[in-house]
Image: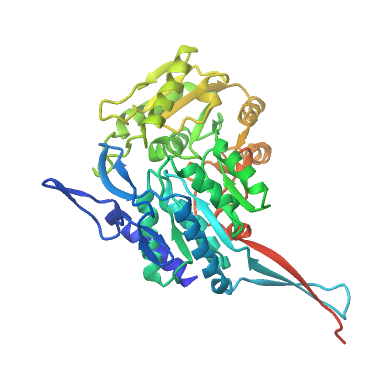
Length: 456
């Protein structure tokens, strides 16, 4: 665990160093952790084809690096490397357990043992956290890893493996395969179906999760899925309005709304609706600064790519056409090609696109509700169940609502629920399994039951 702690500390320390780029003349000066090769078998390597794909800064569309565009052949090499390394790495200690025997002539033991090679497909929105949360648990269990980061953010994965190498991880224990969007389906399929892969962990859309789930079925692979969400954010009349506004600002606008646990459906009890909406509008107007994240005063950056921008724009336009009112924003921002204005929509109904779909952008959709029963029913009327938030100062209501909400995670009077100690994951179509906490290791181990008899 010491090397894992070193890795986490080093990532935090070097976070800003990694992301810093300084334009000098006609070139770029890169931080020392920025790599433009993939990592397989303890070596920095190019794609077998020699092909590259560009990595761009979404704030200005400038190319900041080019990395190997790897294919199935490269991925097979990474899996083989991880499989070979597992033969020795699997001896990493995992905790055992002793159970009470029903007879004095027997002793019962449960051993946790690593499942084997773990494939990991990670998203672009929190690349450092997604990789370390998965790999940390797998490595601690004694598994080896093949990581495929999102094509939009491969540099974080390469920086992490640089730190892992410095921390002393043996060759082959951690491997990173970078690939473009075009090659991702074939690479992802191999990561699910290879007989040398024991399990897969994926964070991303529910649609892709279904595909991976199906591909893993033929080999009965262990699978962990952290998929889409459509988080309700409920403000009851007993809530502290100021605290609720603060919580929503965090739960909605963190990473420009591009978070799976971002507040999506904002439900406000009618007695305090006007007070809450006025305070919210003031906060959005005064406190959000749109721009390039390299500028210190900026707290709302661009969306990740053009597809995501068009998605947010479509959802807003469809909702407005269906009768939603625009309190603030509602359009693309003139800051750049991938920026969208911080937006507040009112008079929203449950059948509108902004309530039915995960927005993944800086858009607040407000709806009034009359009573607790109505709010809970609306919150649960979704195929997703990743995160929920609600604000109330009524202790009885807190317990009633927390029990009834169909969600894997609930923030009560709190808009920031992610933490390494928390069990992260959802129910319904939001996924399978948990990451973080002591339960995060479960996906990467199996229990071996040993019955020792003949004891006199």
